Structure formats: structure tokens, C-alpha cells
Image 1: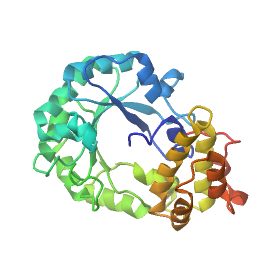
Image 2 (image 1 turned 180 degrees about the horizontal axis):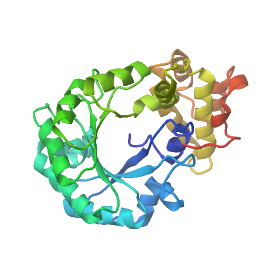
Image 3 (image 1 turned 120 degrees about the vertical axis):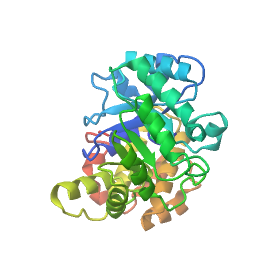
Image 4 (image 1 turned 30 degrees about the vertical axis):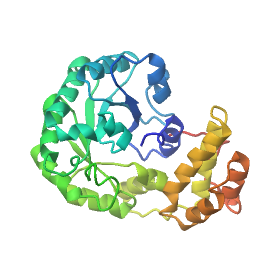
Length: 326
């Protein structure tokens, strides 16, 4: 989720209390201890009394790297700055990241996964939990269980498993049943991830994996009400109606209003297009607006193009004039 789940997005998506906790974009660790400003840029919540979104959702810091010594040094730095949880990224499928020996590239050698997790676990001791996110392997699934066991042996408190290999990228289907094979062999909690776009997907992922919890990523961008939808069903058995276009406009407009004061206009428009692109695969209105606005570079016309005909029924929880928390 690099370049997508920044602090403002976390704030907005957690506003309705559907999430238990959130994870930052990864902090890239190479060979040196990073300065405090890098951690604060990725996780400005560290500067607050509680490392949480305004609505109270705890935020864990994610590290990505392969050098155990550098990871340990930066884990120590993060905890000294107030981090309440550290997540290690062994799941990123990006070619650039993998080419530089990060993310899913470590899944080709379970011992490297073990050394990375162990180094961070030993560096922070019992001060904060260390967790990890994995895929089902790099090119195939032969080492999926070995990598998961290696992370557990290194000291991970729980694992999030994306139900595809690195080479499968984000192509459907997600192999949730493979997560069950891992869960049966581990003693720590395993959390299912991958292709959870709807309430029905959530139920299938839980049923096939046997996991009690799931992690949402792109599905939350595509449907900002997804966590709310799941939570309502968990608590009451009721079904939330389809997310209206007005609610999608509201969250995009709130994002624009927050970011326009800190980022260049074209950058904000580009980020909005990126978010709208996630929505368009699951919403016909989003697809039409994306086609109309894909070449627009000015922020105000972009927002007008989104909200035309929808502003009369905006969800006030995502209004830029209300309290925004995520």
C-alpha cells in the first residue's frame, strides 16, 4: 500500500470505528539508522499523546528491509520515538522493492525471514509487539509454511498472510485455503488478507482460511464503508446498503481539503485519481467519473467533476467541515 495509506487516508478510513488497528506505509530500511523525521513523515501519529488516529484506532509502524542489523537499529529508533507496534513487510511484490532485496524477495529463503524477525524482536524485547506480513511465497508456494514458521520462531506475535505469491501479484483468485494450511501449524494468530472487497468476500476468506480476523487493504479504498459493513454484520447480522456515490465523493473531497494545504495541487489530484481508480472497478459511477476526469490536473475542477449532482446528500462524517478521523 505504498503511496496510498498515508496519515490522512488512515484518518478518514477509520472514522467510523470499523477498524481495530492500522499499519503505516513501509519505512524503507537499507543500511543505517534513519533520522526521526523519516519516522514522523511516515507516521505523524508518533507526535500525538497516543499513537492512534483521531478516532482512537492504534497505528503500528511498518519496516521493510533485509539487513538484520539495520532493521534492529531502526526498530530501536522507532520504539524510542514512541512506536507501539512494529510490523515487518515480507509481502511487497513491487519489482523495484524486490530488486533491491526487500519485501517478498526474502520469501525465497526462510532463514532470512527468521533472522530479520529475530533481530527486531531482540532489539525491542517485550516493549512492543513485533508482527509480520507475508505472501504465500515468491514464485511458488513450496516455502510458504517454512517462511511462516520462520517468522514465528523469530518472535512474531502474529502473521498477516496475503493469499497469493509474489509472482501472482494481485491477480485473482486469492488462495485463502492455503492460509488454513499455515494457520493449522502455527501457534500465533494468523490474519487473512487479499481480495476482500465485499462482505461476502470477508465471509469466504474467514471460512476458507479459518482465521478469526482479516486485514483490509485495497478493498477499503474501493469501498470506504467496507469495515463499517463488516462490523455491522458482526454485531447485528444486518446488511448495510450499498455505499452511495455521495459518500465516496465526501471522503475524496475531505482528502483533497486536508492535503491541498501541504502538497502541490497536481500531486493531490494524482492521489485522488489513484484512489478513484481503486473505486472504479467496483462502482459504475466511479468508473464514469474516472473516464471523464482522468486528464484533469486542477484540483477544484476535479472536485466539482466528482461532486456534481451528489453534494446534496454528503455523509457529514467525511465532510471537510466536520470532524474527520481515520
